[in-house]
Structures are given as C-alpha cells and as structure tokens.
Image 1 (cartoon, one colour):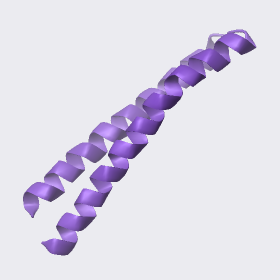
Image 2 (spheres, rainbow, N blue to C red):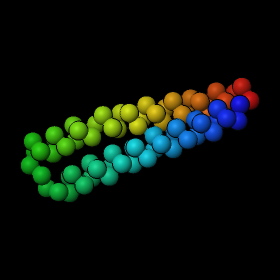
Image 3 (tube, rainbow, N blue to C red):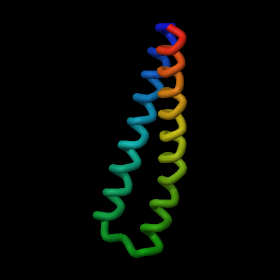
Image 4 (cartoon, helix red, strand yellow):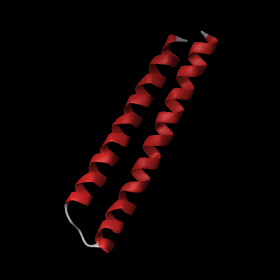
Length: 71
C-alpha cells in the first residue's frame, strides 16, 4: 500500500501547486488595477483551474487515507 500513499501524496502536491498558482494569479489580477469587467473575466478564467486543483488534491488525500487504512 506504500505505492498508493506515495501516489496520493504526489497528487496532493500537484493540487497544492495548482491552488497556489490560482492564489498568485488572482492576486496579480487584483494588483493590476483592472476595470471591473476585466477583473471578473480574469477571475472567471482562473476559477476552473482552482476547482480542478482542489479536486486533484482531494483525490490525492483520499488515496493517502485509503493507503494508510489498508496498509
């Protein structure tokens, strides 16, 4: 079950990188002093990346928990 734990940890790390990217991208967009519509468009473009990163991270954490419980 060690392989399941390591795969889950890798998925969680990839998801965490995506979440950090989303935070940095939104912060840059806010600091750019964009007009309201442009800011909304930029944040709307980043939202799917954030959701995918959260999903990948959740799957990774589930794999770690399953690996620990079965191992």
